[in-house]
Image (cartoon, rainbow, N blue to C red; front, top):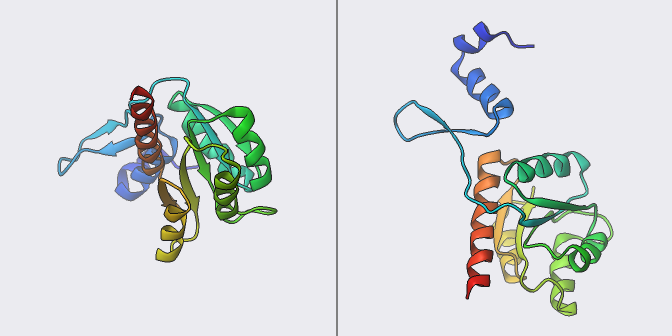
Length: 172
């Protein structure tokens, strides 16, 4: 366990401590060394489907999304994701690529074939970080791509951007 005096001696430890345990996440404001709580503008009640075979990742994402006011649903593989797309009808889907039974690319293909979730904005969240993987995801219908490991701030900003785009389409 870190003692507060240890955190003062090492700015890097302090930063790591604050980003892990401060709620809401803290961000640095420009060249000044001031910190401010990250406020994400989202309307409460947005529905987000989280598809990842790793339960720890799902738990972290659920916690972050619930702090943003989102309603979440989880799926552990691609087949379960297709069922949840119809039952839950999310605004945004966070989709891992490497999963058992049906991978993330397969989910995007099946969504197109079955005409399911056509209005769902998809964020690909994966350890694959090659240019071809990003291009393949976008070509198959994903709207954004975030490589693991990622920060809570990056994730929150990407989700907020997808939710804003989703809401603006509904207003038209």
